[in-house]
Length: 298
Image (cartoon, rainbow, N blue to C red; front, top):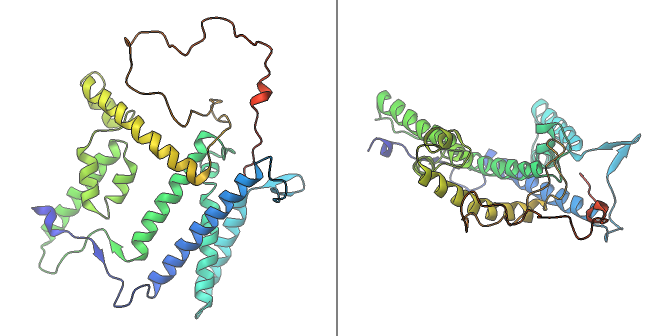
């Protein structure tokens, strides 16, 4: 098989955690620790029972988001690391400072993506996605992983064909809405092949092009599987970053429940929503402020 000519190349030398690989893992470790620390901090700040934890940083009445400190750390560590020559332990310290800056900045990835404070809204989950993707790809690069490794006996035709075929699998996986398998498949071709073969996610380009109006069975299976996977992944996101509890400042939509209703309908497709109210509420005087919760964006 043509793809058999490709293999994942991992070469970290005769000693583990050597040289740049060691520094890369220090960056990733510092990034993870700073992300965990700031998430714990922001969750304590929005807990009304925790009064002893310091609040957010403000200057002149302006709330300073912690991504500002992360950007400053990355700029300073990057400039010092590039401009001057260092020896141990200064190289490790600079790598750790850079990693701390990365963690603080990625924790508010959704903010600098949407240019809105969506930290505790549904869009804030994208910050957890960004961290996981950065740690995954950074870890592969830190240990010396390369997308392909070819022997000297391989012809240029074989090399180009193998790369193009794998990139095609990655493109199909991405078109099916599977960004994780599409990106990681560049380094591990088998992941891209699995993602390209399996059903597309609802709303993806592949689903709109080949499922809607053409294969209702595949669309139904895709929706059922997507909601099942999404339910578990949302639980993972809430465990890592905390559950969002504020409406979206972008759309005004409320935060969806962590455990959505079952996908499989129990009646006709055109049956009325059993949850919808059929009359006036029993307690019209109830104030919406009773469900208000304290929030903090770090």
